[in-house]
Amino acid sequence: MSDNGTNTTVTTEYDYSLYDEIKDNTFAPCDSNDVNGFGKVFLPTLYSLVFILGFLGNSLVVCVLVKHRSQINLTDICLLNLALSDLLFVITLPLYSHYSVVSEWIFGDFMCRFTAVSHNTGFFSGIFFIVVMTLDRYVVIMHAHTMTRYRTLKAGVVLTILIWMLSLSVSLPAFVFTKVSNESSALGCHQIQDSDTWRLYNLVSINILGLVIPLLVMIVCYSRIIPTLVQIKSARKHRVVKLIISIVVVFFLFWAPYNIGLFLWFLKSNGKLEGDECNLEATLRLTVTVTEAFAYTHCCLNPIIYALVGERFMKRAVQLLRNWVPGIRHPSTRDSSDSSYRKSSLLSRSSDVTSVFMK
Picture 1 (cartoon, one colour):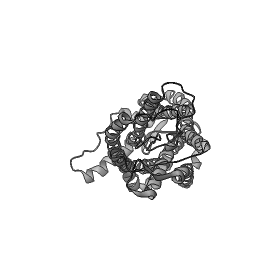
Picture 2 (tube, one colour; picture 1 turned 90 degrees about the vertical axis):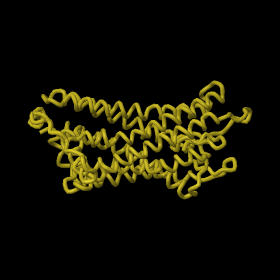
Picture 3 (cartoon, rainbow, N blue to C red; picture 1 turned 180 degrees about the vertical axis):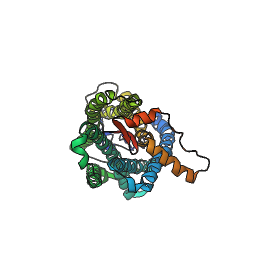
Picture 4 (tube, rainbow, N blue to C red; picture 1 turned 60 degrees about the horizontal axis):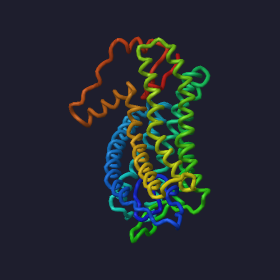
């Protein structure tokens, strides 16, 4: 949950340190009742929706891939770990939803720390696996003949271990600095960092690792992939190109506003933004609250963007759902354009229609 350093402040979790800033004693404390009241209604509602959709969608991805684990490849390994990252991320939301409603942390110090590090690890690992999937698409399409032999299950396992270790390492400060403390006769769970170095580290890690680097990788890789796809005569090439563009645009639209809000708060806390102190603080707090919660919904879209659009994956998912829910039909067969597409030099593979291979 975000904590701006005022009494019983409850917004969203992600970067506490940016909100536990020093106050100018020459000013009276700002009234945050309006923002807090908004958060108590807005956050639990959205968190509950994100939790339900994210849990169901990502659980379906995990179940399908585990059921067909004998046919798993590098792309499927990335999809599986992306779904696990999103699950690790969303299972923390009910705790923060409760925190938003009652304005008090009742789950103890260990759960405060554990939830924070789980939340951050799920966030960073999800971003990192998206980057790996983007690089994998680029390698397969642009360097298929030279790099295919390196796309082995062993390589996928090694990448998985490295990414989870990196994500946990980046998130360790959340475990170290997060703690339960008394806030106006109520217990709060937030990150307490007295060092400007650690505050800067949080800002840089979220903005650079969470937005700038992934966005640059997507733009560079897909800007090379799209011209190659356009040259291929395929009935579905335009669909693939649109999907690729959608991946980049959706990622930017969901995460950029939140990162911009964090950066503006950092500038404000260091006296770089001028204006009415209370109005500016209230505006920025509300901005970060809304944009952060909105960014969280991206984990609900990951199963759709990266898995469910895949033709083979959809058939497997429907087959699995038919065993659980009577009345679900098999996906309708495609028209003849599919056969012409399969005969082209572009082939959709495994569970992701954007993971294309050049023959």
